[in-house]
Amino acid sequence: MLRRSLPAACLALFAGAAMAQTLPPLPAAIRDQGQLRVGVRCDQPPYGFRGPDGGFAGVEVEMARQMAAWAFGSADKADLTCVTAENRIPQLNARRVDLLIATLGVTPERARVIDFSDAYRWGGSDMLVRKDSPIRKLDDVQGRTVIMLRGTTQALWFDANMPGLNSLRLNTAADALQALLQGRGDAYAHDAATLIVIAARDQSLRLVGEPFAVSDAAVGVRKNEPEWMAWINAALARMKAEKLYDTWVEKWIPADIRPFYAEAFNAPKPTAR
Image (cartoon, rainbow, N blue to C red; front, side, top):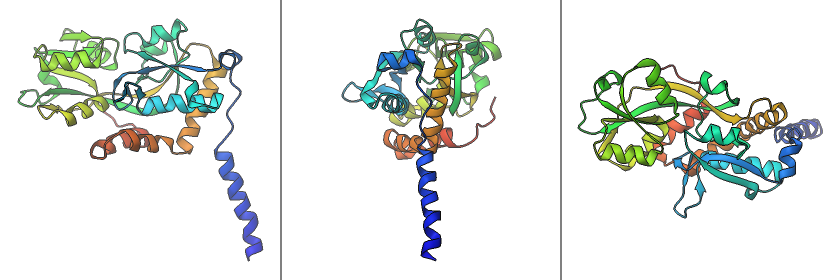
């Protein structure tokens, strides 16, 4: 019986090794750089932000470093650049970075100017308001001022669904939060993943709780780079197979708000307005 079980055990071992699959060859242009130039967010916890020591931190930063480790043998070969919602695609197309792992939602407008990898999670949107705000649902912002970031999924959604809305458009999440706290707007619309973290830290604020503009998040790549895209998609598949997303979610996200993020990486995308 033991002899019969040995081949099966060996097969299982080889299958496990196959899961840690070798990736396709790097494109020559990337390989010759000797590093991975990645655009990440620096103001979007828990995906990309500055840690207590001022260094890069977050789930998407971990993804960038893991890709560098697979590509060049060291996570330190990730050359990270802070990008904003507004400048991330221009930075990519100007060849200042070679890929974006930067809370980038897949939209038809963006797909006209860049290519997207396979989705690695989904992201929904919500609004943050003061605790005593009369805003209880999306339609309550009519006639009020909504703060949002330029070039975001939320800005596109409001343009399409509530044209003429009074909006205050800023460049960074820090500026948007400050504007809300100063009373320069009535609500702050952004990725729910970011707003959940803020609301957990500041008990004077709450989420409206009506999700909208749910979209896939993917890696952004310049148009017509099929070899590079194939490598990135294989790396994303390997991350999922090795359950690395779960490890990073546990590392960077407090237990009380962790379930939302775990769903975003593992559960099907929900329907929403």
